Image 1 (cartoon, rainbow, N blue to C red):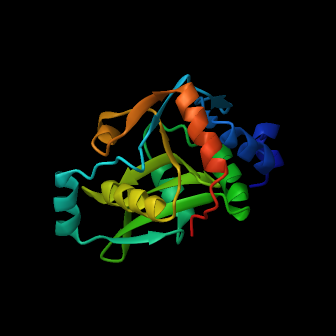
Image 2: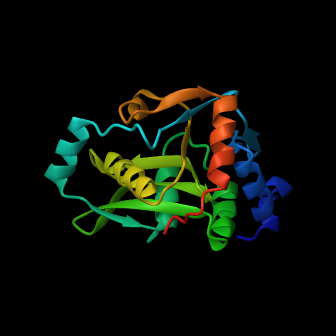
Length: 199
């Protein structure tokens, strides 16, 4: 499948995607093959200096003895996230993520159980910001294990921002909060002066 056959517009060119992510926007397919970019006035983040690890998640992770890996199978993670009845992760976006991955901007956290990929998450990085896109889980606790590992990893690497887009009850368990655009924009600017890398 090539770029032209998917009728991908210019916003999904790698350079343009990074510019849009860096400005705080994120893409979603509308279900009709159109990719729209969103820039909400309020944004959900997990503060890397004030996150929470739920006790229930700790118990599940200890019980299941997951193995966590970084950037070993990003494409399977994206496809796992897209594998649901209704998804905004279209073939267009997957193709665009492949191109962005070649530039080093797409990263994943994989959760394995008995040598099988059972969950994970992926996102886009730009300097000290991680823009979380989606996660999936095939067995209880798998996506939670990936998120906990991501938070700890970003904290250790001195990342400034963990953007999770929209606030959900699931993310609230990890300390996610909703902030106004001005505060979000200040974190964006601060993250761009952070000298760090994901791996």
